Length: 379
Image (cartoon, rainbow, N blue to C red; front, side, top):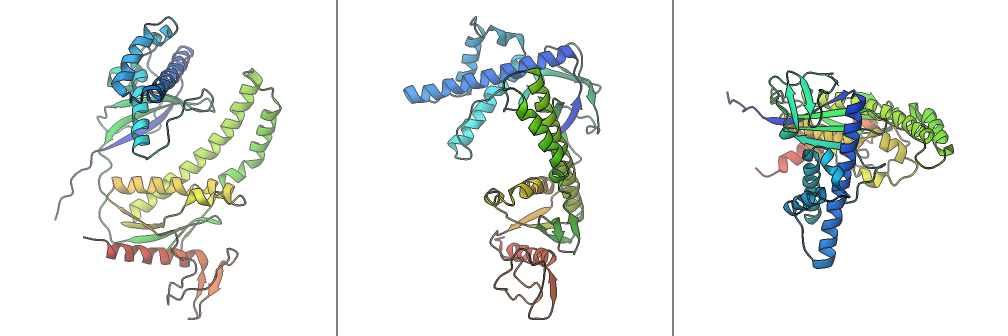
C-alpha cells in the first residue's frame, strides 16, 4: 500500500478576545499608524512613478519609514510597535505585485471608516507561551476566548489582531496544522446544484434548505438603518452608537451564514472523493436587481472558496463544469435537450416518460459532466 505523505498546511485559527482599556487604546493607535504608513507609502510610490517614472520597492519605503519617524510631524509612529508598520509596507508591496501582474487593480488608500482595522505581528512582535499571547508594547497578555484548541505544539508564525465594525475584537494565529492530512480515499462522487429555493441540491436527491439568513433579520436591519439615517452626520456619539447597531446585525447575519457554509463544505469533503459544481459567474448574476439580494445571501462564491480550500487540504477533488452547460434542460436519463426551461418550472416530464425534479436532474447532469471532464483531461 502506498503511503501518502503528511501535508504541512498553514492555517489561521481565529478567536475572539476582550482587551483591557489600555490594550484597546494601544491597538487603536496601532491601527491608525498602520493606516497612516500604508497611505504615506502609497503616496510616495505613486508620486515617484508620476514624476520620474521610478518604481519604489519595499526596501525604499522601509527607508522612508525610518526617515518619517525622525520628523516632528510623524514622531507618534515611534509610540507603537514597528513590526505592524513594516508589515503594512510588505502588504503594499504585495498589492503592487498583484497590480503589475494584472491580478488586481491599482492599490487604493485606506479610509478610517471603510478599511479593515487590523495589525499584523511577526515572531519578533509577540510572545506566545503556555497559551498566553502578549503583543509588543503590552505588559499583559490578551484575554482570548479559546473556542477551539490549537494543534499540539503549535507555534504561531504571525498574529493578526483586528476589530470589526460591530466593535468586536479578534486575533488570528497562523500555525502549521498537521491535522489537515489526506482523508482515506473513496470512490464516492457527488454533483452539487446551487439554487435559491434550496441552497444546495445533491445528485443523491438530497436537498439542503436555504435558511435565508438576511431575510430573517431584514426588518431589524431596516429599522436600525432608518435610525442611523436620522442621526446627524459626523463623529457624534449617537451616530456611532447607531452605526454599531447596524454593524452588529450585519455581523449576526454573516456569522450564521459562514457557520452553515463551513458545516456543509466540511461534510461534503469528508463524505466524497470528488465534488462536481457549476462554474457560476456570480458577479454577473448580481446585476439582476430582482435576484441580487437573494444571490448575495446564498453566498455561492464563498461556498466554492471554502470547498476548494478544504478539498486541497484533504486531497479531495473539486471539478467545476462550464457555466453554459444546460444542466436543467437536459434529461439525465436519455440525454434529450429541452428547447426551453423557465425558472418557474420545477418539475417536468421528458419524452422518454421520466418525470424530473428540476434541481435533482441538474445535479445528476452536473455529476455526469464532471466525469466527462475528468475523462478527457490529459494524463
